[in-house]
Length: 143
Image (cartoon, rainbow, N blue to C red; front, top):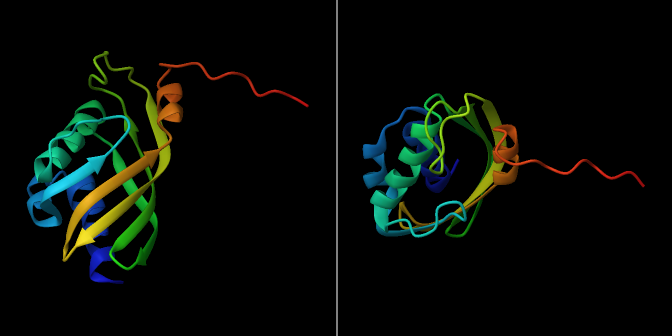
């Protein structure tokens, strides 16, 4: 496993699963940019990462991320993961639903040296909202 893969795994294990937000200072570059369609406009650097993680962890205190695959190419690491927990805290300005949800997603990390300089996340956000009962999905159409 490459150093970059270990750092991406550390983000999942230490920051998300263990709640060690202080580790973001070692993992992410000072000018890090986070690209998340569900949370646009995050502050730069480790503070933006902490803001994002706190928001999800307040809504899903028992959440866990499991990394299933890591691909490294040049200065980029891609991870495929599942994430889920029980929505017992407020989310997106609304009250907790008490429902459990699990989604799949991917992160694309660009490194500068041994720190993540830029992150993109793509997750099944519609599936998350549907599992929480916050949106209705249309019934599948038959041919």
